[in-house]
Length: 207
Image 1 (cartoon, rainbow, N blue to C red):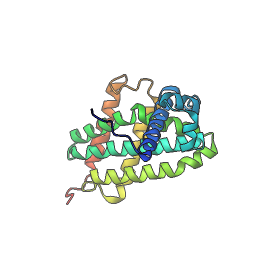
Image 2: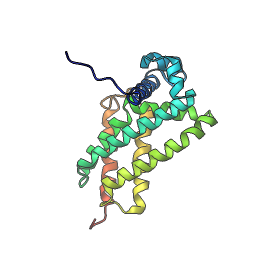
Image 3: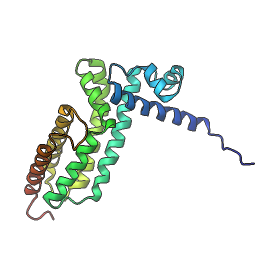
Image 4: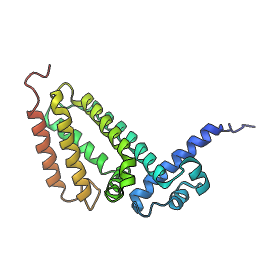
């Protein structure tokens, strides 16, 4: 008779933490910041509140850990775009389209909910600062891998800022998270114009 391998205590702990982080991201995306209580997260994860507090002593600690968790996943998705070309406006437009889908994803809604809440909560704002700085540094490093041979080093951070701020602005203003939803054509044209500006800014000889 086959036996089921028992998980170690460390594996069970990691599994519980992962379930809580995913549940928090889901609650933030579907219910919003105010309704993402520890009770709601525990129910979503299928664990007790006691188990939640053994790993995260406060709601704020859980939220900050979730922000880090989602940031890591987003950076990995951004890095995966490194396989796409960025030599032409068509290719850069495609990259920006993939980035837009990432920014509009339910998981990334986690960050939007937390950033809006942090505007009126100084403690949350301070607690999120290290996660925000880490995310920015990782995104810049990933952007360097994507555009290092194309954009001057002094312009790389500025271009990334333009791209991120534009996509975040679209995400905040979008009533429908579907990238194909209206005003889809206007957004597509805006991404194309941005791609053309980026490509035109490439040095004549990137080598």
